[in-house]
Amino acid sequence: MGVFKRNVIFIVISASILSFLTGLSIRKEKSIESPGIRPSVSQILNPSPTLRLFVQSTIVSVATETVSDLETVTISRVIDGDTIELSDGRRVRYIGIDTPETSDPRRSVECFGRQAYEKNRELVEGKSVGLEKDVSETDKFGRLLRYVYINNVLVNEFLVREGYAHSSSYPPDVKYQSLFVDAQRLARDEQKGLWGSACEAVSTTNTLGITGSGFTCDCNKACSRISSCEEAQFQLKNCGCTARDGDGDGTACDGAPLLCQH
Image 1 (tube, rainbow, N blue to C red):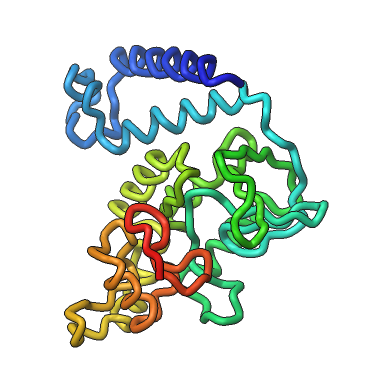
Image 2 (image 1 turned 90 degrees about the horizontal axis):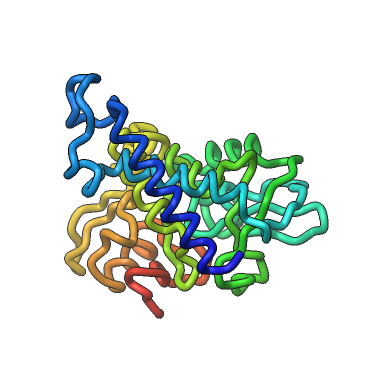
């Protein structure tokens, strides 16, 4: 589908959704106390994360039905929370997200990693899914980089929204990154999955206090909240926060926004 046609679809869908919302009460918006009050102009122009994610997810869902270049494949098995194997033997790494580690023999199983793996299995194993490419064809390990859809649900976003994965940006493949960032914010605010009490004890165990470097261990601290590449490497090497090294190359946070190189 051409860029112009995609933009037209995006604009039309956005306008339709916002027009529809102006005639309805938005009960999920905390700032609207009465179900009879309609959203103001400012709420439409400056939507909260909940409303913005709803609009973005709806656009993605509707647009999926019109995308003609989705590759239909069958999933033979799930490797972990963000990696799958196709029936023809190819492996696929989900774009834009990172789930806790379970399959790397060099690392221990991370908090909520098993749950992320099981949820991914429940969603896609043995089923037909659609694959959408962004910019890159594969990662340095030869795995296909794709957005994965099943029944018009973007699996990448679903895993982040339900607290099974972090949003993790690796340019130039950032088509839906704002969607993932909003999904993560909501999951964190609602303390879902890895943001909840299940992983609090692990975070406490991995908090070693201030060291000579001046950094504090915090394995719940995503790359977007880390101040520097030095701190990122400290979190990985000194604290065992292996989620900061999603591609397993020994360098923490080598994706956006830090783009660290070790």
